[in-house]
Length: 299
Length: 299
Image (cartoon, each protein chain N blue to C red):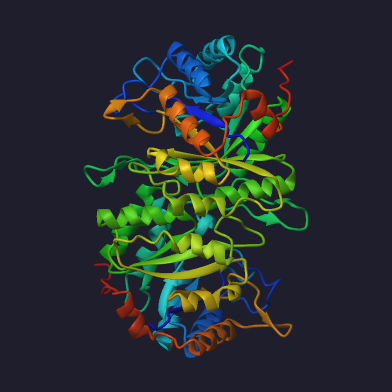
């Protein structure tokens, strides 16, 4: 079976209450990216964070972090556009990437497109109510077309996130329009425990995603469980030819009562994949599987 | 098997280009509601429209239409809150219902809650592109909780629309919170041809909806195909114990090359259901199946 692309999702907006090893600052993210690469990850995804864990959209964060990651390994870089923490317009949300494209040292390899809109309020398990009530993750068709145009302009690869079937269908329409090129790299988002915006992180939840992969186009899919334990599904994903996106950003992974580091989470996925006959894809192999274009820096 | 609740969706925002029998004005909607009731429909859903078909949110439209429907039959009334055509805040979107609650002659029986947010842009099949690019159907958690509170206040029944799995999961959280009562009446929205916001109107699309009905709560489900031919699925829906919501608002139904009227669409569903041993639920039976509360008029 095909090699497996493993992406380390090192921090997202996760706190250190669940797992103290969540990296916040550039040097912490750089260290985790390097360690995850050593274990077999081909992609690293991260969010800019301040020392106390708040979201940090300052482009300087990404310039420093990207350059540090680049200096230590060839792992593919996939920054965020800020999720709901960045409520700017399309141009504003993409502004940090524009800055990153000014130098080969800081240019990323992917930029994300969450291909639709969805309510993403946080659920308070203890109190049985929502902690937030107005968080709509808004990605209009026009905004997505703007992102796609800038991504193509710079020779980046679009990282297409689907939170539900509606997102996957929008990806299909974009493929029909030529807004997206083949193969489409689709990340099926599942969510659990404190957010119910994605599909459940169950076999049924994954099946209800993969059933709607556009049939007339070549696609490559990966899966994530935001706030749930993706290891409930990794064997199924590996068996079905999917790829795996995982890390402490999503879930406070432990083993034998011990908090795991990001690199240990990656090592666990690699061991599972190898046991099923799938070797981790190197960066070069990932580029080939996804037919990634060549970066064009800003003039 | 249980009786089947049939809802006539008489007009939505459909034009008369596809089928000239789409009712716009109060007297046209009243006539269709009565004729659909005669054929076996227990619920009528409609949108206020002007003589030339534009959306009409004037509460006077609903007062006149509801009173006219009430005077002619006991069919249950399910008005719209305006969909994306009404971009007011939560209170503004519910304002027409508040007006309707001032008299027993004009009070509806249901008010809709589309339980989430989703991109709903229109696809241009001929040109292979979107005609709109900024239509996000925004229903925040806070807005939905406001609707639920007003619906409970007036003793109306919430008509819970799910466009995708994320919506269904939000309904489940609302059931956990007591924001919604059992049984939850869930309408699974599928979309086709010129809108891809819902699940596909295929067996897989329906299955990916019903798989996520909250298992710990009593639910009753119906299905709609907005802009697609629901008759591709009615036999499956009937067999699986679902209910049917259908009409010219969704699709320009024809038979033998002839444009059908709403009442003829309903008659066709009734014939299919009876052939499978399911009688159409009367209004009284529908009230019982859905455990509908008693209306409380505005003071």
